[in-house]
Length: 552
Image (cartoon, rainbow, N blue to C red; front, side):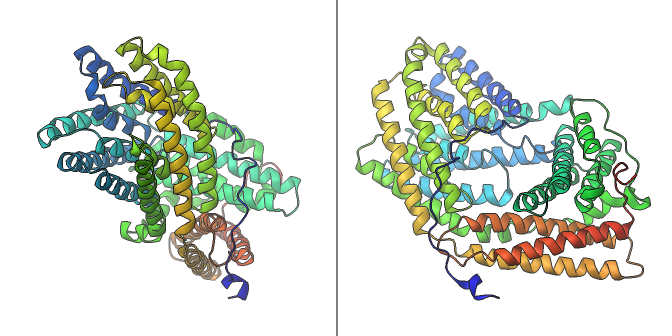
């Protein structure tokens, strides 16, 4: 190990350029946007008709679960959404019981911070995806400061459970029309990413941009396999999608011989509900690749995945607690907003946390101004209040994939309007509390991230490098073997590809962390290059052929 790998990495300059840059929307932005409107709208309109809009906070706990798992295949989505609903109910139960037993703001803030830390660790460990732990923290923190008695808790939890069941049905409903939609989208992303790398390989010489394109292609292919392996039985559409993902893998291994246009054409054909493009197997053994991939992919135990996340959980607990206490010291009546602001900041490293903090502050401040403009309309009556909230729910999901601060512009007035379900309040007081809590949560939350260092990031890189090297050596031995066992080379190749994806993600996360061992950039690049060369050799050894076109 070089001495450079052991030297501490100093504090880097925090970026401002590009933090607020607006990007392209997610290709499925409308799915969570429409889902949350339906999941929130039906319970809220029902409560409105019954004259019990004051109970909407509890139904919102279940309804907002509809925001999760939209990238997962439906078999996996059913399980994931069920766990999300159960996790939400557990969080709300802890919050409501605590609120019923004590009115001490000091205790309530401490419990809110511990809940936020647990939610952060579990969401990251399970990789549930957007919106991550923020929704859990928002609901549980608000529940902590809602007046409560023990006798009311079963009824309130029943409302949350009923709304959660409705959210589960809303999330699963698109499967009736397009049962393989998530797998098709994941495969299309893999094909497009492989095509982008093939085009860049031909147009440019070795460069950092080309390396990033190759890493992005490998990650997209890995994600596509993860999606396909979560679907259960190997139906004919799944077999056809597997063959397309294999073609994307071959393109990454032999970019100079790849017809990028054909890859993009297949990706376009995967849109909609038409048949999956039919391609010939890339080898005699191609039909068995899905089975061997399933053998190669294993999930680490949850405890092993939680271990590396301890520093992030500690940051979250400390930052949320301090933010809440500072808010209390300033006399703000809703310290849970400061807790949620702090909880929303924490990303994979300090640099990303800083960027999220800037986005959060800008979005919230603009959102407060939007609330001031909308408040007179929302105060026309309960129906207007509910409809405004639904509009902001849709707007938040429509915009947040372009940049977090854009989504926050809609989230902020929505959160302010939700507090008025129990009765209209003075807009000026709400706006002042929100601004103070936003600034306090962002400043104190980021300070906690700087104080709680993540020295495990360097260890994770070393472990990832060792894993890649072991996988590469194992694959190389099988390549050299005269007759590797049935499926052995495919399983080894899949394991090496997975290890390379994990190495890149680990290196990117560590690169933005402060006060740790310097990232061994040269070793990472060398491991990636040799690993991808071994993958290419394995492709040729397996007899997988490239796309017709450039070599013809």
